[in-house]
Image 1: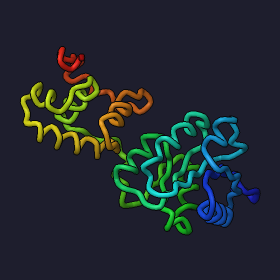
Image 2 (image 1 turned 60 degrees about the horizontal axis):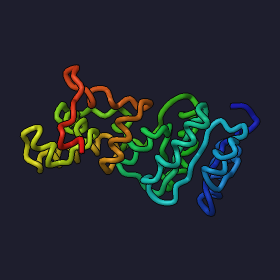
Image 3 (image 1 turned 180 degrees about the vertical axis):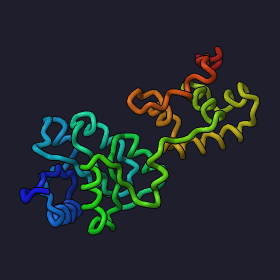
Length: 220
């Protein structure tokens, strides 16, 4: 690293912004602070930032809506999310949205610097206990079938009838699939699967080489 501090676009407010800026400075990074994602995206300015750090006030549940505009607008700059706490599905969701790193706020003094250096080197960096979320989700054949029908608008009862399953079994498979995908709802799952940049449609929308066709009931 050169003697000249590398510039980091920092999106945070209040005490969190001050704490993050202080840690970044100690680690050799200069912060260009912004109060919101819109402050950077709307005017198309990230300055000379080599990376962007987004501070989230509570959990990472709102992260996708924050990250996606940044990753689409400033492709070369990796995005690191700092949040108060993070659940397993939230790590998957953040990575799917384009984040390169996730750091829990209580660990910033020891983790933020190494995370920044890792993402700037082209690596993905998440808390150790969530390392499994870095790998692409592995869905069972049944989970793919059910998700394919969800994409086409089938409700749980219709899916159960179509696949000759109990509705409770469909719900169980959906719960498992949602956890693997890092989503909490049918709408989030559908958006993720249909997004061509995330590459999850393959194997879900077509099984055995034949696209799934909606029944008249599901086409309403």
